Length: 124
Length: 176
Image (cartoon, each protein chain N blue to C red):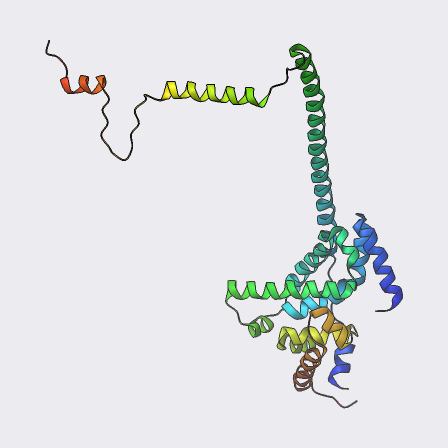
């Protein structure tokens, strides 16, 4: 009898039973877990959709109420917009123009504040 | 694999993709023997082979709906098993510092297998033992083995030739 026939006549061991049972147990566990995850995902999507819809409804209603309170807005011309812009710039220049700034370590004269610092506290 | 069993596999995979665990059990009953024997040849350890057998079928389960696209289930399962066994061998070599031949020599005898044959198989390099098991016990062609293990048919034939030489020496050709 040659070696190949001897091999063929020798029975290889059958797979044990335990992996089959363990596989089916584990498969059932993973399936249940997957279902839970899917259900949670759908619940999140549903909640997000509900919140979005609610936001649209409430927001739309508020917009309409505000529009009714304000009434129709007058048309604004580009000349008017330019004038507003100029006024705004002028106002900013007025409040910020005299504010001292520190740049690159240059010495600045802070006026009355530096006078106070150089004089020091007066003796009692 | 004939046309009928391929059609049956497709039907079972379809059911598995829909979450039918009975289909998984049926697929296990059909393919566990060749997968287990391949793993046994690769690991020479019945316990490790049993663990990897379970892991192989869990890999199929994890494919989910993607399992429907598997063309040849036997090739797929044997390929996964081969991959898992290689990973297990590398891990065990790292952990224990054993050489591949040591793993074979340390293999316990599997019940039901003639001791001499078991020892001869364990003496082969795992990749040669895998080819012998699939060819001799499961009647796969070189082409089918090549497809399953991701090799060329020439490589498979060459591994079988080397294994045959060694087995002839170890087992001898007896007169009737």
